View 1 (tube, rainbow, N blue to C red):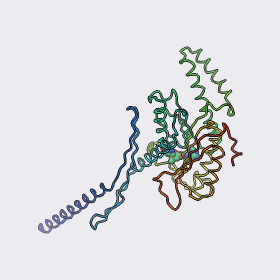
View 2: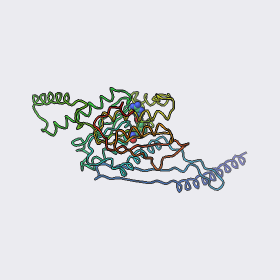
View 3: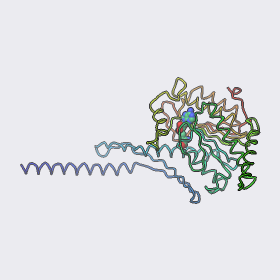
View 4: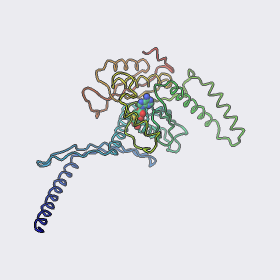
Length: 351
Ligand SMILES: C[S@@+](CC[C@H](N)C(=O)[O-])C[C@H]1O[C@@H](n2cnc3c(N)ncnc32)[C@H](O)[C@@H]1O
C-alpha cells in the first residue's frame, strides 16, 4: 500500500517537474517575443511623462506545446490605452506643432482620464519656459467631460454633455471669467484690504458683462482638442457612486449616447457637436484637433464633415496613426484643423 502511494507521489512529482520545465521554456520564449518601446520625455525634473507601448506575445508554440498568450490584466489594459492616447497626441504635436508660444489657453473636450490635458500642460510649460508651479500664471486648460474626473493639478474641469447648449454657455463663461481674472492679476498684486477686494469684485462683474459672446476673442481658447468617445476603463473611485454609476450605465446600455441609428454614426454626431462648440468658442486663427474613434473609411458623411470643417478653418488635414488597426475598413480618424477663419461662425451657415 505504502509502495503504491510512494509510486503515485513520485509520478506526480515527475509530472510537476516536466510541466514546470515546459512553462519556464515557454516563459523565456514569450519574453523574447515581447517588445517594448520606451519613449521618455523629461522636463528639468519637474514632470516626467513616460510613453511606452508594449506588445504582448499572444500565444506561442514551444516544441509541440501550444502555450496560451499572457492575458493582459485590467491595469495593463488601462496603462496601454493611456499610453496610446499620450503617444498619439505626441506624434500629432510633433507633426503639426499644436503647442507653440502663441497658445496659452486650451479646451480639452472629453478629457477623462486626463492624458491629453496632462500632455498639454507639460508642453505649455515647455514652450513658455514655465515651472509647473508657475503654470496658472500664464496658461489655462479646461477639461470638459460627461464623467466626473479629476484633471492634472492646475487644470480646471467641468462636467456636462456636449449636446447641451447650457454646457456650451458654461464653457464660454468659464473662459471669460478666467480672462478677466488674468487681467486683474496682471494689473496689480492681490489687494490686502477687504474694501479693495470688494471693489475689484464689482469691476470684475461689470467687465464680465461687457464681454459678450460676439465681442473680441481675447478670452477664447486658441486650441480645442476633442476626443469624444466611449470612456476608457474605470481606474478609480470604485466605491463612489458619482464615479462608478456613469461607467455602469455606459457599459450596460448599448445605445446610451448613440443618438443615430448606427454605432459608427454616433462619432460623426459627436464631432459635429464639437464643431458647433468650436464655431462659437474657439478664437480666430485657433486650431481644432478632432478625433473620431471609429469611422468607415469610405463613409460619404466623413467627406461632408471634412467639407464643413473646411468652411470654418483655413487648413484641414486628415490624419491616422500608423499603429491604428484597420478592421473591415473601420478606423480611427483625426482631423487637424488650423487657422479658424472668423471669430464667431454661425453653425447654420456651414451645414
Ligand atoms: C476616449 S475618452 C477621452 C480620453 C482622453 N482624451 C485622454 O486622453 O485621456 C472619451 C471621453 O469622452 C467623453 N464623452 C463621450 N460622450 C460625451 C458627451 N456627449 N459629452 C461629454 N463628454 C462625452 C467620455 O465620457 C469619455 O471620458
